[in-house]
Length: 207
Image (cartoon, rainbow, N blue to C red; front, side, top):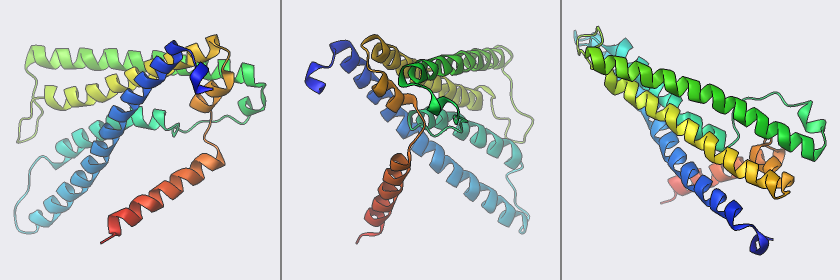
C-alpha cells in the first residue's frame, strides 16, 4: 500500500515524523529538568540545615515546572497520551469518527494558538519593561518565559502537522489511517509501550 501512497501524504507524514522527533528530544529534556528540579530542592533543603540557601527556590523551581510542562505537550500529543473521554465516539462509524478526531484537533489547535499568542505578548512585555523576578537572583523574566513559550509554540507546530496529515488522509479516503493517528491508544499500544520500556531498562542495566 505504501507504494501507492500519494506523495502529498508521504510528505506530510515525513514532516510529522521530523516534528515528533524534535518533540521527543524536548520531552527527554523536560524529564531531566524535573530530575534537576528535585535535586535542586533537595540540595536547598539540606543546605538550610547548615545555614545556606539559594534564596530563590520557589521562583526557580516554578520556572522549571512550567517549562517542563510546556516542553512535554507536543510529545504527549504525538504519543496520544493526553487524558480524553471517548467512550461515545468510539462507537461511531469510522468515517464520522475520523472527522470528529480532526475537528477536536482543530479545536485544540485554536486553544493552543491563543495560549501561544498570550505567551508571546507576555515575553514582549517583559522585554519592554526589562522585567526581573523578586528573588535574590533577579532573574530576567524573559528567560523563563521564553523557554516556556517555545514549548507552547512547539505544541502548536505539532498540532499543525498532525492536522495537515489528517486532512490529507480524509481527502484521499484513508479514514482508518486518521483514526490510528488521532484515535485513542489501544491495549496493543499500551502493551507495546510497556515492552519498549522494559527493553530500554534492560539495555540500561546491561554490562
